[in-house]
Image (cartoon, rainbow, N blue to C red; front, side, top):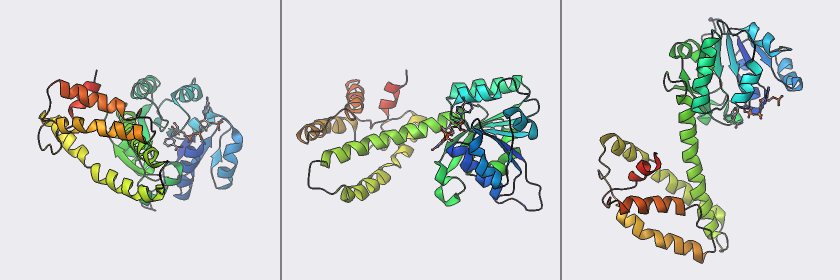
Length: 294
Ligand code: NDP
């Protein structure tokens, strides 16, 4: 989001200059935010120093420099190691390190005990998308809503922002939920490409068909959400589970005939069959979700 040039830019401390940290750093520098950086391997800070960043010799020095402290380290363990023993009193800690919801909640409590406000972030972008608004990259945030509101403009410089709740674990949860769905999509596409691998079919001819089909199917998640909310899993079903299960042998036989392992398909088909065996013929696929939740 563009900031008013007459308003002083919030100074930022950033700990962690890996691929993601470096991309984030550049956007704040370009936007005119005073930036103090620290990295375990000092050499990674050299280019940013030339671009105007202040380089701290120690993590303690970087943290002491500014109220807003952003971490973008490898994992939660490295955040604990870097911040161990540092004075975080009065700091606004924004942790953009990928973690689990439980780690994020623990880190929020850990920060509170040290007198810091805490906001957790999950970045839905790869480094080349950072600072490129048209790429659609954004980050989920959860934890202190007050802290999010205070730093929203600064956090919005590298990528879009989406606040998903006061529960500090929610950003990580949304992040993992979306990425898990993405891996399901990758798995399906891998199986599709494997099916044509030994044929005289150009993968480049299949690719646009796949992309269009997946795009056409993606909005079905709205119906799934509606059914989960109402509890009526038969509402608006166009392809009943019984019909879909009856079709699965054709998928498995085709895989066998093409010399392709069915291992990416069978776990999902097994769940569909189990749900059908419970007598849910008129439903679509939503009931599978209930089988997954333990
Ligand atoms: P990199 O592997 O490029 O960088 C890791 C960073 O963590 C480096 O600054 C490294 O320091 C530092 N680090 C690792 N272990 C320690 C430690 N024990 N003590 C101090 N510093 C440590 O990772 P990225 O920058 O790509 O990722 C950073 C975070 O962003 C991760 O949590 C990642 O999941 C998340 N993310 C990354 C995306 C991506 O596509 N890259 C996408 C979305 C989220 P050093 O230079 O000294 O090794």
